[in-house]
Length: 143
Image (tube, rainbow, N blue to C red; front, side, top):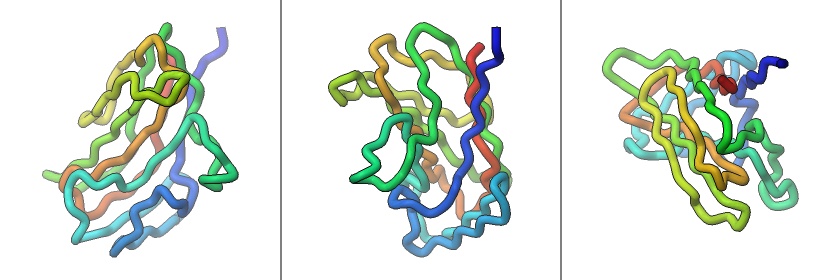
């Protein structure tokens, strides 16, 4: 059986990146520096999708297709200052676009399952009280 492992990067500016007062430096594909001293906690910093409407959003899907029958492991590769944190939230949708569930991840690694009726999902990077960090990647692996 082939290994099913996907590496998600922050590939550039898009309409889903919080830019108000933010300094975002793309050193390379595996190193994005983000600074914003005034952003309130709970703000979505960046967002990725498994399904997009290119005509409307002007972005391509960045997330792998996953289903409710498998188990997955997520690994968040970020450097965050001591005492600060970022959250990753997965929001699952059914085929009609209704929210079918969500998962909020505070740890650097976690095993999860998505709801059986998941048709597509989004992943949000949320400010948990952080003012700066280095984002490397997020790895999703089927286990």
